[in-house]
Length: 284
Image (cartoon, rainbow, N blue to C red; front, side):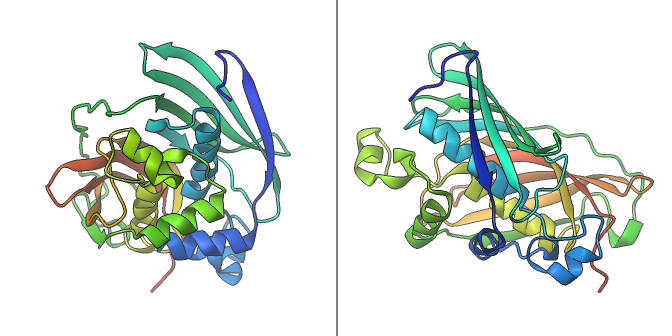
């Protein structure tokens, strides 16, 4: 079913701690705010909260249900309120005017029962391959706050990972993913692709892992993420994900970072920037 312009669809979800734990294993992001009830109880959240990228993965799945065979190529994500285990939420999608023949704008949100939003997403869905590749992001840096809590502008960390076909199968099972580009190799081949594509949330999960476990570190609270998909990525591709601090704001305990993923050929597969709050960092 394809969402009509101006139409809104909704779905009620209840996410569980078991799902948080499975996503932590899949992504490598075992940030204790997601998986350690004792640690989370000492934070401003009071209990464990969903990974931001797991919230977006549920939105991504809903986009695939509305536009089978389409891909989200640009996402602006805001995580404004915590989403807890066993908390009923409502996922909403609303389509905007299309851009040309291949791009559709979508507003999405995960709404809590108290009216607050756990996730807001402004997304562009590309209906047919190949992707439109924009110029790389050019982000300004700000040297203010160098040395705060051991963090400094220009500091970066990276990880290398190749998601396996089994990892993609686990993602599909965990999310109930139905987009044929991710679940049906024959469909992907007919679309001119090498095989099933890795979904954007699995790429974003590499940033989640780095932000929540390395830089700034365990206890990091993800507030915003821009996620731009620039190249196809498949199971077995050796990827390098990196995050780099571009600005520190100690007065608000905020950190801005550039985030990107490269393929073995050096091409940028995923680009973006993140804003995180570092007030609950785990003390070493």
